[in-house]
Image (cartoon, rainbow, N blue to C red):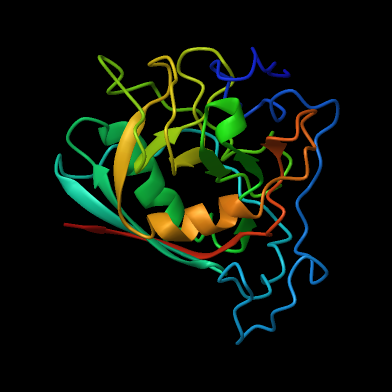
Length: 236
């Protein structure tokens, strides 16, 4: 199911599991590109990024949401990318199903060597980097969906981490977005974390722009390839 951009400065559907990237006529895999980065693995380029690793070849799938086992407290996600490390405080109190799912998937290495496949920039009025799809196509997920949570009065200021979905209730999977600048969205996307450190990493990626693959110059794959090298979750 495709998502359509409603207009510059208006809300745009952040497609997730089971849906193609917003506005695009085709969904394309994000492949690490040495052409897009002059860096070697040990030498960051002008965007602060090294050459991304090869993507995982066999995405994992599960038949149902994992059993809810986390404590209703704060967890910390450490997301190591080829562009730097992003640390997120996860809200296990108000979004327990979401945080539980991320803790489960992280423990299985689900996010390791997966791309951040979508970037929208300020011309769209939505400053987000979207990740969590092992296929890089905008349609991938873990094989199950999780319920919406924490939506009452939800807003999405810079530093918010929230779930993507297909545009319908309770369709979140593994795709999530990191808000790096002013963003106005309807309260339809489960907010489940706040960036503690690493916001500047995303802002540097955003400055490199997008390839416009979704039909607009401000919505597509990041020009600077971004791959999650490791994703860990711990209590506290």
